[in-house]
Image (cartoon, rainbow, N blue to C red):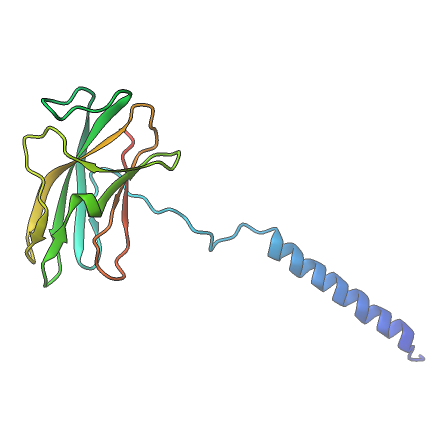
Length: 167
């Protein structure tokens, strides 16, 4: 049996081409497991992070308002009842205008607004170990769908909490 350099070289080149094709096939034609996935939570579930626990108890819609607090034409108030528990050893500052927003499926963002409520909205500190329960309101388009509530604690390196407000 005689060794053929040309034949051996062809076998090596063809093997490398096949292996590179297989590599690139799996590289470009796979379902990417590291793709960013939006993690959302349902209404009624207590979500705990290292320094805060957060629960959305429910929501209500108000299309008329009361007194000077009325939604604009083609808008409505979405009023979210929630609680925030401070699990840290330091106070947690809460400012609804800064900590909360609602986003719809089209990507429109709605910031917190004053709404008719039987309860006060707190802007201030929650002492360590204390719980705050309140209503936070948003004025959104009546046609808005796929609403999600976003809560940012404002603390370094703490994950944002996102709640699906679908009914």
